[in-house]
Length: 381
Image (cartoon, rainbow, N blue to C red):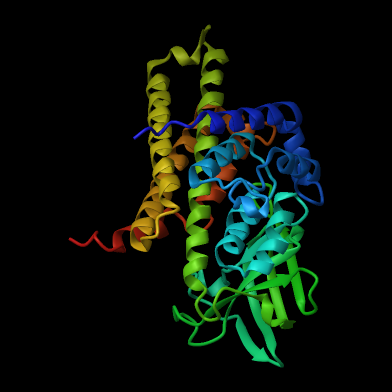
C-alpha cells in the first residue's frame, strides 16, 4: 500500500504553506492569540476560497468529498503553522456530525454555509463530572409543547465564543451514564437561556463553559434519532482525534526542524553544539519519534471511515495514546536542547510545546486512550 500523499494533497499542502509563510508568521500568530476574537477572520475567508472548509462534505452540498487522509494533509499544515482558526471544531467535528446524521433540510442549510466560511459551530458534548466519557450526560432534554427544552451545563466547549451554533448532547431518557437515551441538538448561540463563560486556552485558542436554562427548541433541532446519538457523536470525535494526531505530526516536524537549525547555529567552545555526539543522539531519537508519529497518524487517518466500531476505536485510541507520549518526548527534548531560550514566549518552540500539551489533553489524553485500547475487543490475554 502506498502511504504517500497524492499530487492533489501535496499541492493543497503547498498552497497552505505559502499562505502561512506569507500571511501567518509567528509574530502575526502571537498578535491574533491576544486579540478579542482569538483568530483571523481574514484567514478563515481564505480557507473558504481554497476549499479547505468544504473539503470533507459531499459535492451536492458544495463540498469536495474529501477523505480522512485529505483532512490529515490539511491538519498537518495546521500544526506546522500553529493556526488558531476553529477548523477542527467547525469542519471536522460539527460539520462531520451534520453530514452524517442531520436531516436533508439541515444539511442543505448548514453545510454550504460552513464551506463558504459564513458559519461556525462548536460541539458541546463533555461535562465536568464525566471527564472524557461521552456517555456521561446529565444535561436533560424534555419534550414539551411539540418541541424540546434543554437544561444543564457543558464544560470546555472548544471554540465556543465564536460559534454561531452549538451541537449539544442531552439526555432524553435513562440514567446519567447510560449508553442509550442521549440525543443531539442544534442550538443557536443566541437562543434564550444559553449563557457562555469564555476563557483562553493555554495554547492561544478559545473555549467556554456552557449553561442552558430551559432552552426551548423546535422539533427539527434534533440531529439524528432521539435517544440514539451517542454512536454518531463517538464517530465524529474519533474523526477529530485522527485530525489532532495529524496536527501533532505537523508540530513535531516543525519542532525537529527548529531544533536542528539551532544545533547547527548555536556555538559553544568555538563549535556548533550540533557537533557534540550526545546532542546528535538526542536529535536522532527525536527524528525516530517523528517518523513513528507519522506512521500512527496515517493509521488513524485511514481508519476514520471504517464502519467496524471496535476496529476503528482500537486504531484511533492506539494512535492517540502513542502520539501523546511521542509528542511529549519531542517537545521536552526541543525545549531542553534550546536551553533557557526554549521556555521564552518570544520563541516558537514554547508555543509548539504548549499546543502539543493541549492536543494530548483534548478528546482523551494518552492514559485514557491507552486504557480504551487495552479494553478493546481482541486485546484480551
